[in-house]
Length: 173
Ligand SMILES: Cc1cc2nc3c(=O)[nH]c(=O)nc-3n(C[C@H](O)[C@H](O)[C@H](O)COP(=O)(O)O)c2cc1C
Image (tube, rainbow, N blue to C red; front, side, top):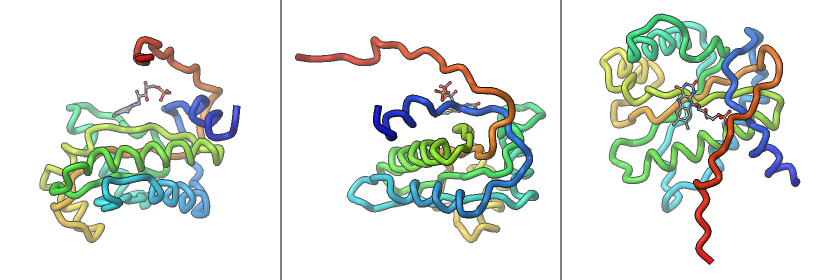
């Protein structure tokens, strides 16, 4: 198996992280992988916000948990959260952002880091507090949340792969 196929096969969603911060060089490489994702007509209607500032990470943890009506940390203690946003006006913004998120998960895996797609970003950035957070990042509410990644060094042993349903693939020959 070549390296790309191997990374696709071996990446797993990681749900426990070490506290130690991720090196800036590694985060830069992950973000670069997101930047090189395809987008419809190469419009790139995205913002990939890499959050390591503790206050902002904590606000995201609280806002995400509030969407679920729970306590706890939906980002599993990850020291870095990358939030993918797209322009509300972009017809394919969610598709474009999803591709960037997948590229970044594969890049993280290739660098020995764990990642996990975390949901509810749309709801977070539709709230007034979410919009205030966006504003603090220099972004207006023309952007909506698509998804986020928890990123960090995995804590604990290897994660068992979840089964795939072969009937997902339909061959018309
Ligand atoms: C759109 C989307 C939303 C997800 N949201 C969450 C989430 O909020 N929390 C979580 O722990 N995992 C989340 N996941 C991760 C999936 O549960 C995971 O990809 C799936 O169980 C397959 O496991 P694997 O990634 O290890 O192959 C999400 C994945 C996707 C694609």
